[in-house]
Amino acid sequence: MKKLPIRPLPHSLHNHLSAPALLNQVRKDFEKIPDPRRYGQQFSLPDILMSGLAVFSLKHPSLLKFDEQRNEPRIRANLKSLYGVEKAPCDTQIREVLDRVNPAELRRPFIQINQRLYDQGLLEGFRYLGRFLISADGTGEFSSSQIHCTQCGERHHHNGQVSYYHQLLAAVIVHPDRKEVLPLFPEAITRQDGATKNDCEANASKRLFKEIREAFPDWPLRVVEDSLSANGPHIKLLKELNIGYIISVKPEGQDSLFAEVKNRVLNGQCEEFEVLGEDKILRGYRWINEIPLNKSHPDLLVNFLDYWEIREGKEYNFSWVTDIKLKANNVDLVMKGGRSRWHIENQVFNTLKNQDYEFEHNFGHGKLHLATVFTMLMMLAFLIDQVQQYGCAFFQAAHQRFHSRTSLWIKIKGLFTEFFIESWESLWRAIIYGHSGGILQPNTS
Image (spheres, rainbow, N blue to C red):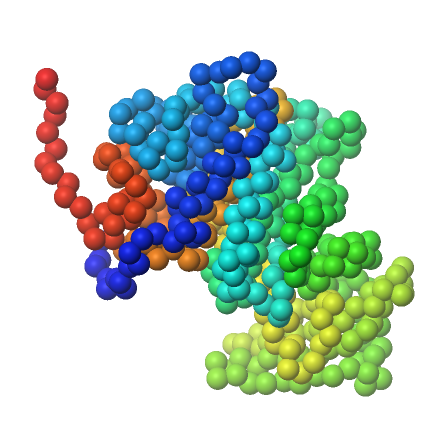
């Protein structure tokens, strides 16, 4: 492992941005969740939830792998010292209990963690154009032709087969110049109680943004979304919720908008300029303020931005509608804000699927809520990792020792398995500065 210069570390872990601070907050929030069981159990609900969170935090590939080692003294001790787990349940007990937990109850730690960062002024590094950009998009989390529950969506195929699925609408705070993203609570796209039709991303979006505004009533928010969201009802909802927007638009699907743009361009009712950057990329901007969204909503006026760049002889074009009044000195910033929508695909879904979070692995489906609960615990583990990557000097120094986060996860899991660990600080220092390993000697007693 290559030794790199390490900046001097603080004397102690951060009060809000470190693993113990974040996990303690999560534990407090879990303790407020009603236990779905009606009688006493060997394992408390907070211990079961924290054990599930530890599975994703430690990047175990399955509950079975977690269960194989949970009774070893080192594992029990480390679950207690690092995750506050007094008694770790087996994989079957985790599945049976968490299947009955209402996923909405798991929003609390997402809200509390992000609100504490906001209250402490620690989110200012994410403020952009005066607001916090929220990128929202959906992705599949489960699909099967056999396993299903009452909340599964259904796809009926031409050959008569039926496939069952769960999807998720994620929402994360993004910034064009930051690699980190901060997840807000996701919204499950599942069949709603009493519904006969599949849920959809549009309906989930209505629920999610109302819930986000209710959770963060004073936050200055702006969403960045794809062209499916460029419709009158959605933009009117955002206006009602006092949420700004930068939404991608395309000629296919927004015919009347682009026809009006073309008409105004021909009549000289637009502004534009081009600039050749030091990177030899030619960038162009054309904008029109206060233009009708479409014929169905002629009174709904939006601001339109068209952007193109020419590099290596090829032209790339992007367009958005926004609530921001466009000027020559802000169109580049708006463009970058609009393009940051891709952070949710690149920094969230790609990371969860390809960097040991095992997003596409079926940890358990259950009969009620298990698939969604597991996904929310995985997203919560991701939030804790991202907050540390954003602001924890110890995490950053440990990450610097490796070429990838995947290598860091392997190191953490190895130390967690083989050593008694007193605290997160001692774990980070052992990774950063090294540790005495000793010689492997079998126990012959």
